[in-house]
Image 1 (cartoon, rainbow, N blue to C red):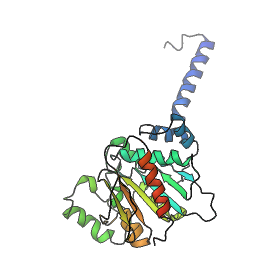
Image 2: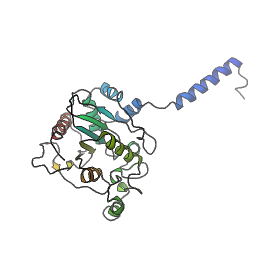
Image 3: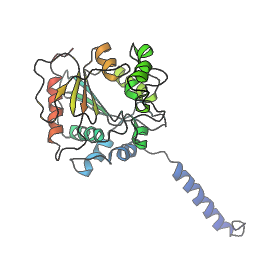
Image 4: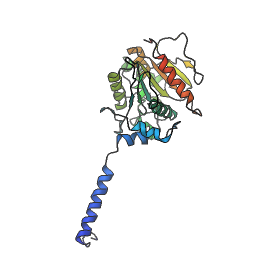
Length: 280
């Protein structure tokens, strides 16, 4: 072989380079780099440095990996107030709802630059496999927003999927309630963080869908109207509001993003004010 004909020293150098190359290729990606890789594709209204600053501070719970083993990271930004409310934001639970990623990224970057009145936790990419595949569902073909273990899941989730959704592959609730790793990750956050208010970012229905107490005077927000679209077996709204009395605001963005981040700032400030009220 050509390798055997090389001088001993040169063979040692080649062997070293091969071993180094193999080690470099197997080096695990850092959480920071995973964050940058995941979010850099989404529109930002800040300087490029803002994303690196955010990704320096992200964390990951041990349980939080996708079906394909991709890390599901989060950012915590604590309030300096003595008894702040806690707000959990989840984004891209449906992998093909691209604009949701831009709002998640924007709020993370903005939280690094303001003194928050509330304590925020943002999970910007709940379904990384779906994002990669450009699918609503996760790698196993499950709609994660129909897989939460609501009390009626066993009786109604599959039946509703078969009758109302005509067995649409996009809305398959799964074979077992709460069995998907991404759902287990979100539930772990809910149990540990104990949010007072949850925001789930979606597209493209152009509404603020509120699962919570009836508001006599919903906050004024010109970009999206307030509505209540109801909830379904296995949905986050039913799991949290109907069964656990935690309000959920599903933000259904338009497919076209605004020119500036002003409307996203307004929504974040609006939620911050709303959560101060006793909504339970």
